[in-house]
Amino acid sequence: MDAVYQALLSIKDFLWDYLLIFLLCGTGIYFTVRLRFVQLRKFKEGARTVFGGFRLKGAAAGKEGMSPFQSLATAVAAQVGTGNIAGAASAIAAGGPGAIFWMWISAFFGMATIYSEASLAQKYKARDEDGEVTGGPVYYIKAAFQGKFGTFLAGFFAVSLILALGFMGNMVQSNSIGNAFETAFHLPGWAVGLGLAIAAAFVFVGGVKRLASVTEKIVPIMAILYVAGSLLVIGLNYTHIWPAVSSIFVGAFQPQAVGGAIVGVALKTAIQKGVARGLFSNEAGMGSTPHAHALAKVEHPCDQGAVAMVGLFIDTFVVLTMTALVILTSNSWAAQYLADGPGKTDAAALAQSAFQDTLGDAGLWFIAVCMLFFAFSTIVSWYTFGKINVQKLFGKRALFIYSVLAVVFVFAGALVKVDFVWNMSDLFNGLMVIPNLVGVLALSGVVCRLDKEHDLLKKTRKKQRTTD
Image 1: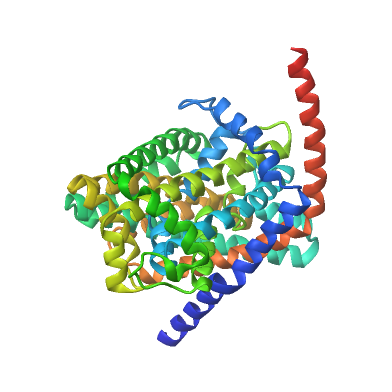
Image 2 (image 1 turned 180 degrees about the vertical axis):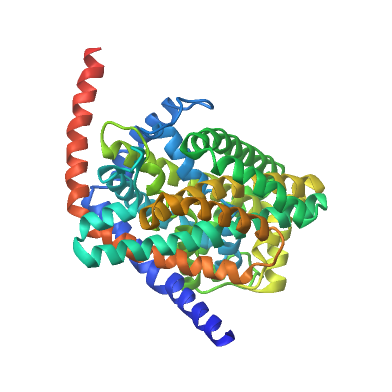
């Protein structure tokens, strides 16, 4: 068993450190060129749709799906998880401050990928046996490839997602909450796990309507709370802001030159770790968030594609950047990095100590509360993505068993050390990417046609606004 586990770890490392970096970045660059830098052309429109429709209590979701903002909130809930705290920290720990620059670069190109995913999810969404709107990569993969190959590819994606997100992914999210609450409030793991399981079950049984209601409230609150707390820490350490920003740009190209006495890392490592962690966090190309974007009620598929880009921007350029600046402006990170060496510093400890050094015990409490918001919102979104794929593979009769197992995994995650589960979740996350991007790239012509249709629609809308 140990030999099998080591072999799986090797596959996981190869996927994330080599293959997926080129596949994901290459796809992002390809769509950026073919869609004429859509992330610049249509970002303003996406932001207008998102913030123009912002409501803590929007229109009720139902069989017809969700509002664009509710769909975005569900997608962002999946993207903004514990990785937004540990992700930036682990990138810095392994690749130095310069890794953050390469996270930004990968996110910029990833915006074109996620635009394409969301547009395709809208284009090929369907209705289930009860008439409810549903959709995701399994639908556009089967549209791209007819016959047995399409069925296999879609099935491979669905199984990988169910294992990676619905079960193991949610287990590690609850484990992160349990560890944070044990450290901050000395609560036993079983109590935290029980509370999470009950709360999760309550949301799970409420269907899409309750999911939309929860995410549209949690996501804005958690984003505002975390950004406000981060800005407080950064402001209290204002004398370190310029050195921190400088270290990101200098470290992106000359990592050995950062921090003087700090042991530098190779440029290859800074790029590799920054890109890999950025792609893992924002999920562009993984095929998870299209499930949420498929549920939006929009006039044209690319309307939601533009909204999806805003979600990625919030995830990486706002939340992850806040974490990075908190760490880099703290007094402890350099000493900790120097003592441990590149790649050996504990990422979670790096993030926690950054807040604690500035705010004392209040910093630990703050991280625990943020972890609760981040991880729980991810749990309910990932459960929903898994549910869509379980229903597609096995029908509605399998949903009760899936729901029970998901609740059990949430409870168990708060009790145990889950290094194995983390690694398996990473592995299946990586495996999800391959069939998803094969489908997206095969339908690139469809994406371009949709984008041109959307450009014409934009002109019509602009004329109408001018007339009004």
